Length: 159
Image 1 (cartoon, rainbow, N blue to C red):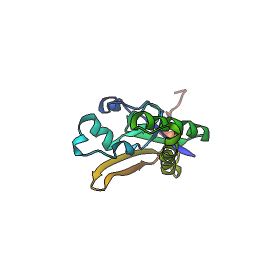
Image 2 (cartoon, rainbow, N blue to C red; image 1 turned 180 degrees about the vertical axis):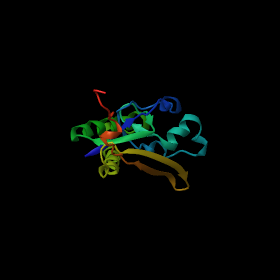
Image 3 (cartoon, one colour; image 1 turned 135 degrees about the horizontal axis):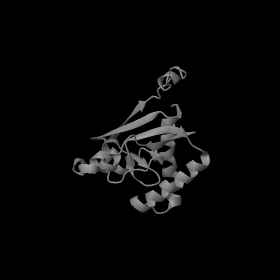
Image 4 (cartoon, rainbow, N blue to C red; image 1 turned 90 degrees about the horizontal axis):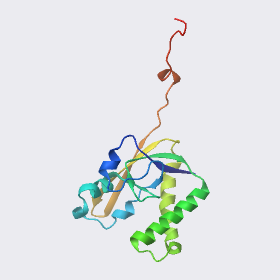
C-alpha cells in the first residue's frame, strides 16, 4: 500500500501557506476543505492553499509537493483516526466514530492515487472553482534514474 508524504525543496511553503505541513508528514488532497468556497474566499494564503496545497494529516497544514512512499496498514489506521478527529474538531462531525468512514474514504482515495506510482514519485495538485464545485487535477513527476557516473568523481588518485 502506498501513500504520500510532504516534501520540501526550499522554504517557500513556510511563506505561502498560513499553516505549512511538516516535512515527512502523511498527506492527502484535502479538497473537502474548499467544498463551500466561493471566489470571495480566494485571497492571500487561503488562495494558495486552495490552488495547490496538499493537506498534512498530522498538522492540518498545507504543502506543495508530496512524494509517494510505502505505508503500513497500522499507519493507515492511525491516520484514519487522526482525520476523523479533524472532522470533529474543524467540521462539526458528531464523533470520531461517525466521521471514521468518511476519513477512511478520503485516505483510500489517496492510496488509490499513489498505488501505481514508484516510490519517490512526486505529485502536485491544482484546483479550480467551477459551477459544479471544486475541480482537482493531479500532476505526476516521475522519479529520474541517476547513473553513478553523474555523482562519482573520475580521476587518478595517484596522479
